[in-house]
Image (cartoon, rainbow, N blue to C red; front, side, top):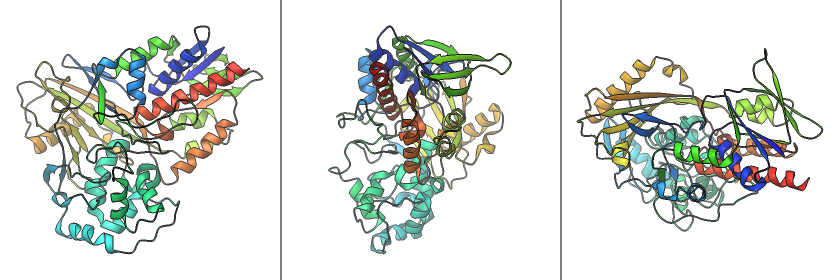
Length: 494
């Protein structure tokens, strides 16, 4: 048996590892990656002599997939959790503690969001529960429009967008409610009379298991027992291993030494034939499986396999599946670009907080800063201050089309404004993520259902990745392993 896995991000690696586990040592697994490295948007670099993640930095530890996978790989002892440092938010030219008790920034009856809002916005929040709400069960809507209509602009721009922007590099006005905050949509479906009431219901422990109200936001596409965040989104694939329930303990986790520890272990255990720098230009069905067209047009290569797992971004999958009914809905999933600037300082006392989110209406270039040395005890054993800032939102790619020096200058200006850090860093790394984050727009669930229905009609083919059921590592792992199980079941049944 020969299986091709196209794309060596965490989804492709998890699929290859699962295929090896189920198919055994005799199977041939070919892992094809266009870049010169594995990992996709998980990337660990050397920052002043220490490993440092410049893509996703954490996973939702209360979902079981990543802890279970690390345990399977013999890496359970490498799981680490954040310190007790608290997050902050910059709004109204002030930096204050992150309001607790909201639902991804949406006010509840228990939350106090007054510190980040003007007097008029506070009055709008207080009045919202008494205003009539018309909601059609099962419908979807633009999240920003709904928030602005019910609370005004400030809740959207100072609370919800900073949280969701960290997940998608997206604008609140381009995201769909049902895909990004499904628990809120469900509470509205069940008859909540206001957004405040719906958010309150969604954050009640008996109905919303496993999420810390001030943690990074869950962003599900299909619901499972616990939320996730970019740092893990929620979502379950069909078939294969299932999420059985929340895991007790800290909300978030990371891997000591960076995500490359997990990636390297997956690659080693998969025992796949890894081919880097290879472009897959075409895919067609054969009488016995699939044929892939590889390489440049001047030196094409054909690869015949029994089955294929596509672990590539939506636009690439749409091109490879041109002529099938999956192509159109795949092409409707847009991507956003972002940048992470990592900096290390010597002899500088950094903030004692875990990080700061920046409201969309603030006159700053960055949208967030993670105070990594405060947030993670393992990051700076040498005493240096390490932190990272992120820039870029959907529709604003042009603002990132400057050289690295300018991006670093913007980051340093904003860090001085926010934290008074004027010293020159001893090490810097600029990581550009061009088209790295899929956007979950209105109707995303229906779009994914159409994609999966089309793929189900193509025997021996599976599609996985962040474009489907969540951009977080747990969701990608679960979806990939489920797809690998379906591929293996089909091959073993033949």
